[in-house]
Length: 486
Image: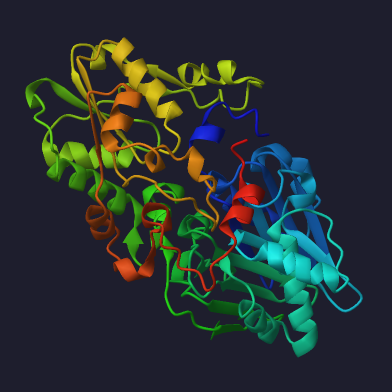
């Protein structure tokens, strides 16, 4: 999988995963509903997909590699029965992209049986794995979800209660985790780490189904009503009879919602605590235009967003500046799963297969090229060249997020600082490398203002180097284990 997604798999940011839980008292076939919700979260992970259902006292786990529509065929869905389920779409950040690490993960022992689906990364999973191994635990895969399952099992066994076991597990876990859990009692749980890195929400459908999901769009997919977003440390339990209890786990000294959910990860139509992601991204574009440092010939300028991630910010820039927005780059949505590219030289051509310029909208213009972020810079550099070759008079590169200067260890796939161009070069040097005439990044104040959240509630570690974790992890060891840029 790592060599078949053209250049975007290596040069764009990706999140860890998407999770869903659905509980129905009556309908004995929620697999179709789960299929629809996983489709709505496909942007959060494209490597594998899975559904685990409860039917009677049996947990049936079905998972496979590829997109939701590739693995879950109509025939396969027809054979998945049960009135409650959890589901997962995966993008690997801890553990290889293999079937063994695909989720949901089913834990089966003489004492208990449950399935879990995780979005996030446990920053202390290596230390926990070492500790558990010395205690006699045996692991099949290389991911942190298996570590989470063993910790949960140990604490549930100690407390003889799932809810208390989850609370006790939170005391030893560190990092980011939003989780759905389904046990062989027919109970469904959703819980979120005390720092609150990753999103998780709860809603209800018109026919009474309980829905727990990474984003509100999954609730929308079932024409449901969003009830709430999980607070940091929040736990929801839905017992076998469908009764809901809303609990809180241990509290953290600080919170840190991942700011990249607003910048890039989440779907624009998702909502977090009443804040629409689209509105945030549009405001990011407006803020860029308000702090435009260059003298641009507005009478001969166009705003061209890099699809798809730059579209909303590009719209905001255009609205604020009055410079017209043009779809100057057309995206081929079917290329990325067609070609296997075994060498860097071939991957370098990927952008030309993925994007094609509309020359009539670019030629002779001052092009304001808008994107969400710059990671390694190689793809963006190729796009600048593509626009210039299409006849642009000037190329002004505008980025709606501040420079990425620090690795992420909480579920984003840039754990290697050496891969971050802004960690090595100044803005002027990056501009020269890109081949752009000018380059301007969003400032930190503009980013925080656009999110409508207090800075103290956001994780800005990749922009500041300040990691809101309970304990400082072994960054060098994590970099080696999580690095996918090799």
